Image 1 (tube, rainbow, N blue to C red):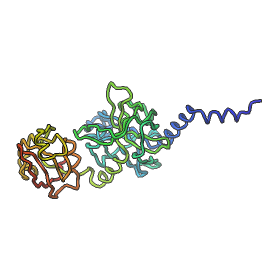
Image 2: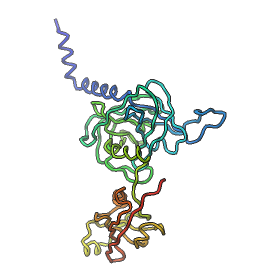
Image 3: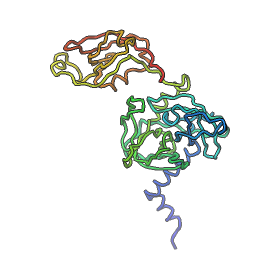
Length: 330
């Protein structure tokens, strides 16, 4: 007679069964924390009542603190006048925008309710291509849809809606659709390692998530000030190739730089003496070969402090001093 325990042991060692159990565990672990978000960009008309405005955007989010703090994408709640948050148990609550950072496509919404379950935040640094990941969200309004895939790549760059380049983005082939934005990307333990943010329309298996370690850096600023402070020098720029003889003569680290195409007349760059046509090659002593290099260096720490900025003007290399200001609110 066959021992039924033999069949159970075989199932435990079946790779597909192990995969299935890992996905189920991840979904069950994070599921109680995943919410649906609907945002309206206009106030309700008088006859509609206080909560009847038609939502212009919908997406997902997840509770990361038991006192009602929800992490989602900035583009989901952008310019929202009303935010509705629907919990897994069916309760729909009014959400209040706490903070918003379009540069990383992250935002925090607060709700007030009891019996809330916060997701566990993991560490996105150890992620490797091929690692199992699970996405939970509300694509097309279908609540708590679970999809699974692998990490396709790490360290990608992705352009945010503000135009700034987001670094260290996670690429995955877990199926995402409109409405998944802001939902969690988790590993087998159910720990959140990313915030799903974008897909390439028309592509197959091309989805992206903001690393949770980026969110960990952004969250304190959003809670404290409602935004992330960055520095500003007041110029319009584009990438250009430097003359080879200039690169060789000055032993520059790169063959490209950032061309100043316009200046704010009262901005820090203009006050520092930069002119249209100058090519920036260094800032704060660090190489600048693209506008994205410059953006990465315009952090909060630069605000109000004197920094060297090196330019090529014609065939002359010049170093000026510049005092960046706080970037104006968008």
